[in-house]
Image 1: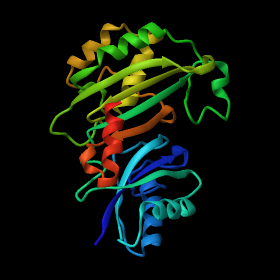
Image 2: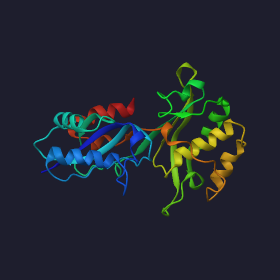
Image 3: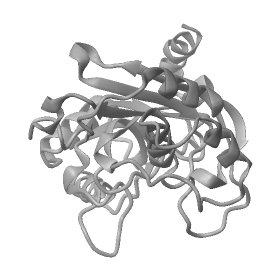
Length: 267
């Protein structure tokens, strides 16, 4: 009988079309499932806590999959890291209770967006991992913008057009900017119960326009009142965005993991 596991995956999104399998292009899902099939000698479907766009990175994308009973968390992690391409790495593997699903079971997801405001952001060692803006930003305006989107709102104005959804309401429990070290710019930290397609990038793009005095701070509230994205700023580039983590109820972790995760959630 199979057991469900949760892998915490890190990847450099530069060479991928995103997590999800696409008709064309290299996806993270295909790479992970290819290795799982080779390791377990059977077709294995992997589910992620969220989709990522082409060029977006992950520091802690939660991925769930079933494994044969002869495997354990340590042996799975070793096998995955031995066979995955060099731009992917598994930080941890944990056993989960039956019925766990990385996307459906998630209570919250956290992202970070990095912007470089210094001249050195154009360095080849940085520009594929942040928005190499290379211009100063009004930090107070960034912080004020982030505060306005906290809480539950209809984020239709900050969602890319696509398949209609039942609703566009999301609840953000974290939305804040902080300076990066050594004067390299700023990072946006955001956590919510769900995110719409391009939502974080469109939020960042609009906040940056406010911080560059291209539009007033009052536009943030006005956009939240709109039912479309016709007046929203263009989305920020994908390379500055990172999927940081997903949060799950402690009871979904296998018995030996429950206490540790209950403590982590309380701290």
